[in-house]
Every structure is written in C-alpha cells, then in structure tokens.
Amino acid sequence: MIQKYLICPEKVRRVPEQFSWIDHRLIRNHYIEKVSHRALALYLFLVAVGDQQGLSFYSDRSLGSHLSMDLSSLTQARSELIRAQLVAYQKPLCQVLSLEPPKVARSNSDGPKAVGEILRQLAGGNYDQL
Image (tube, rainbow, N blue to C red):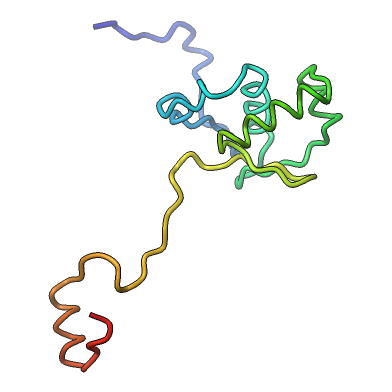
C-alpha cells in the first residue's frame, strides 16, 4: 500500500468559502469519458464561476476569451455537456447540474406501507387509499 504524505504542507487545499467544487461522480460515473477536452474545460470553468445553485451568466464572447475558444468550438463543447446532462442552458443562463439521479416523487399508493398506517386507514374507513 502506498504511504501518503503531504508534498507541500504549507499549501494544503481547503474547501473554499464560495460554492464551487468538482463532484467525484464526474469520474466514477464515467461522465468524463463522454465529452471532449474542450467540453471538460468549459465544465471546469462553469463549476468555478457558478453560484450555489450552479448558475452562471457569462456571455459566449467572455467564455470564448477565457477558454481561448472560437464560437463554434464553444457551442460544440456546450452541446456535449448538455447531451451528457452535465449542464442545462437557456441563454443567458447556464446551470451546472447535479450528478445525482433525479428524485422521483412517490404517491401514497406507491410502495410498501407500515402496518400501523394500514390499520389506521382501516379503522378510519379509508379503504380506497390501501
């Protein structure tokens, strides 16, 4: 087993006060393999500048300037991120999306119920909810 040690202890990385971070599921769930290097550069930039909800509103011109991309390359990179479900885009906003699967709301009739809940419904005459 590799023994870990700090190479540069005076520069240990800390979670910043702002909201940006990179979710490890980007690698673990193979998102990183689905997009080009340009798309990953755009993703990194959007993660770094997004607010706590992942929203940013940099113009295409500004993004292109920061990332040294022409409009065509930028548009293609953003399209890759959208197809991979890493970002959503509606001009002028771009939103970095959660890598967690979306939570599906369940109705009361879905799935198992506790015995106590069933007995309360029977006692109350609520047979249609069983």
